[in-house]
Image (tube, rainbow, N blue to C red; front, side):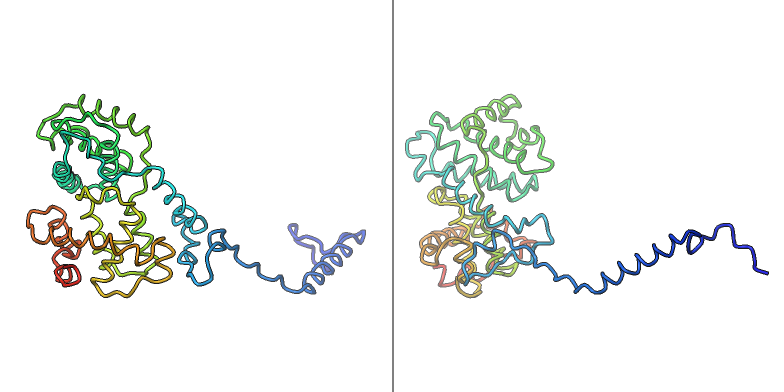
Length: 328
């Protein structure tokens, strides 16, 4: 006799024959799927940025698709936009010419002090460059700045820049302490309001550091070459005579000079494309940077020179290449 089926078991087919029909349909569907040719793999979508490239230029962002922070599909348009912003927020040559109380030497002293404060607070490099940009743009549009208020202007510029760039910006009391209590909280807040109004709350002027990182990637340079370029670039912020030069040109010139000093090859097609300057356009600015290098090397009190003597920065400012005939 047949054994009684388990209660949980399901019949293979219903008594009315419908189960057999369902089984046949499943087999038919399976046969159709197996008979179809394998679907061709769709090519990866080409970004609009890549489509814009000339044939002789390497797409340096081609392998960044997996990193959303690098915005590989839009990065070329982003940098083109930064180049446009440079022109929207220019700093004119000799912008202190009509100022009685503020001179180029006083600006240089102030910038050196700001570098020291920046180091003391351990802030981002972006904060330092934005501080100088805010300072120069405000000095350019404001004539009635007394000598006694210049330090307050510089300190407030860093106060604004830190809030713009840092995750945790220093407290206003820290700035008062760094100024040896020369100013009050009310002084800083009042100056902050005046500066933001004068700049129409527009703080988006591109920084040289943005362009340097892009150019270093295009040149596939070493950490040492990039660090040397950072040192050369930072030297320029103290020089009033270079304040009007476009950030992108300062960055490209610093990198090209670093490559020459460290014998890292020539200015390639990729570098010329992504940095937007030819070697011939860089040479005059690089010559000015060489003068700053010689001046910094001969002065043991230069803040930026001493900053880059730190082993964390590869003691880059004390390298022999900076005393070579190429610099002189």
